[in-house]
Image (tube, rainbow, N blue to C red; front, side):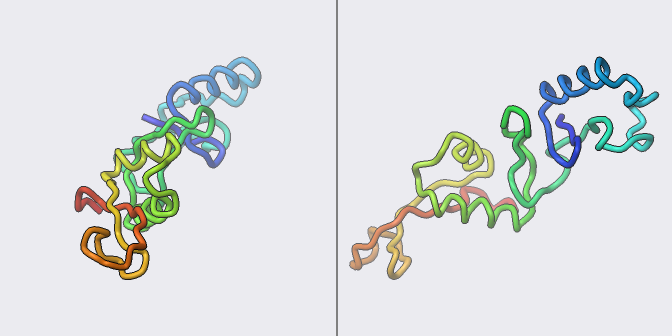
Length: 137
């Protein structure tokens, strides 16, 4: 589970900290029935959501600790991740490697000039490109 709060997404641990801070510092902001999410706004109190049940145009990471939340992507989200991975090549920062693994991307070398697989062309302009390992979209 994850949470939305003040136009951002949060992991369970960080959202628990936010709720504890609100309870301590601003008890009047605590909803009477926080299980009734229709009774309050996510600007006032974190609302829970399940990242695997909705789609987003990009990977969601916690606004607090930056933990990857494992959300599903729209087709635009897959294109975004692929373009980001293509720009970085096979050497990725840790969070991007986590995205690549979760969303099913791998790398292959292709020619920058003719876009054939690097071992099938004679142009000798190889580059690393991302490709989906699965056809989920």
